[in-house]
Length: 272
Image (tube, rainbow, N blue to C red):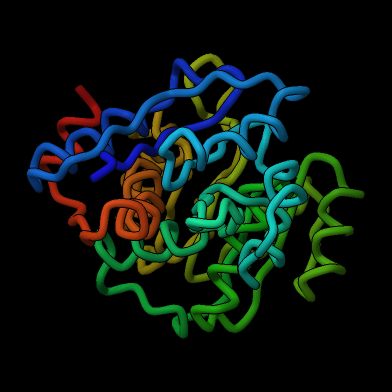
């Protein structure tokens, strides 16, 4: 019997925490299998993906800059991946066919439900900061969960407007980002602002109700300046590490046949 192989494809990929994450689950569950980092250049991606099933790979995660290209190269694409416009989870069939999915939206919502169980999508509108690939996944997640209205803002107005038109949400000028805070029940930062080595996210949360949820998809540091400001107001805050952990669950289950759990011990292992 072949030992199943999986991995994460990126360029670069050395920073990825996915090998530690999946390796921890494999050890905890006592499963045969390996999960490895794969640094693949853009020009080699198509050849690599076609060869992987013959090498014993059952699937792979895909990270920057290959998410859009992986979607285009797949034989079958899930509806969610199609809506988000990118693939982060590939599964290889016995016949070598490539199935592409995107589990970022699932990971985002699962993180909120685990770490902010009192929050309900029906509580009110959400403000999403940023208009990149992560924002697309977050918008899909919030819409599917039933959030009644989504405000979207980005430093480049045209990107926000384009995304807003595509998903049927409301675009706001970046300079007006604090103006809707009194009306929202959830604030999501999908930009890199506040990440280690990046400028902080400049937003005044004083008008935000203390009942609101604030979450950041950045997880280095775990407590970004945005989350610190929200916590000081008494808001519920959720860091971005859980999204990384939860988005990995569906792929692991498909590849290795067992559904893993996201636990405090797993968080500690990945942070270490």
